[in-house]
Length: 214
Image (cartoon, rainbow, N blue to C red; front, side):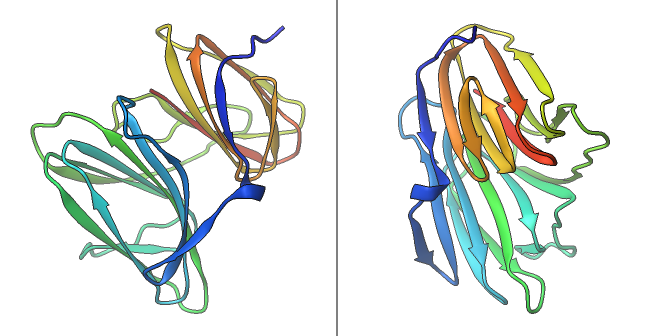
């Protein structure tokens, strides 16, 4: 029997989307206390739309494109759905994001984490989900454990945390899961605290899930 750990659930049906710049923003999670994970947002940009990210000093930024393409600052190549962008910065600064496709929207997630860094850097990595029913690391560039997985219906997974008393942010990108004994569907998110073992089961085909441990 799965223990019911303390949790905060963010149901997509009750999301509040706000107009900002030339897109709409859903601020899924925001924490100003001692949490390493500071904010998670989903942003949808219209054709030729743009968005400006203001991030704090000692931050790691992770951007995952759900569909479409993004141009970031003056980088030569766009970021697509098969790639992730990460940035580490010791200073307050901004990132300028622009939808790179004509006649299509762009949809992406932004994660802001606190991290002490001695240098500023960025990277673009391929996001390759090679097989189903397996967890893959999203990026090697951020310090917290981070995973994504594509699952078939009724497939189960157990993930043991390396240290007691940690928290998990989980989000269903597509489909439905029973996540630590809670029903979560497309774009639902959850934060679990005081957790030692994470258990989940896919309830639909092509169910896509990601989570971070912090």
